[in-house]
Length: 137
Image 1 (cartoon, rainbow, N blue to C red):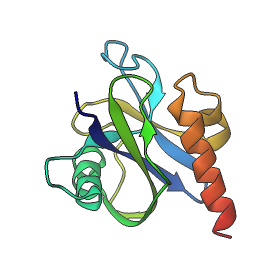
Image 2 (cartoon, rainbow, N blue to C red):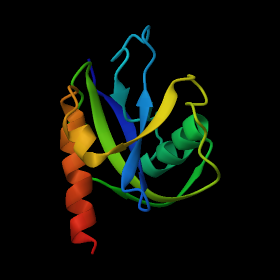
Image 3 (tube, one colour):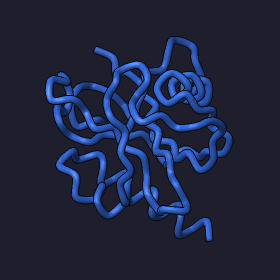
């Protein structure tokens, strides 16, 4: 079985020093009632940048204007997915209160809150965001 490539987007608000998370519904099949980062699968022959732009538009209704890939891919904690994390530093449009195509609620969290997550990939990504932000200064 081949690994599915998935873009994972971390929308960062510099003013509040927080990132956007998706609070999954209680009946969601993957990570029910937990906070995750929004993600989307790459289509066949699609670049990471195109997948990121398409998925973030579908899920959040915004256009990423400034973004960076946060290092190497990460094996998902469940399933056979490879997560390609991107940090979204600037965007066009207004963020919704819920994921547009799934209805899960969106919440802002600090990187320290994410570091305490029970989903093993979230603290790794939070640390990558912290590292990027400290090196960008």
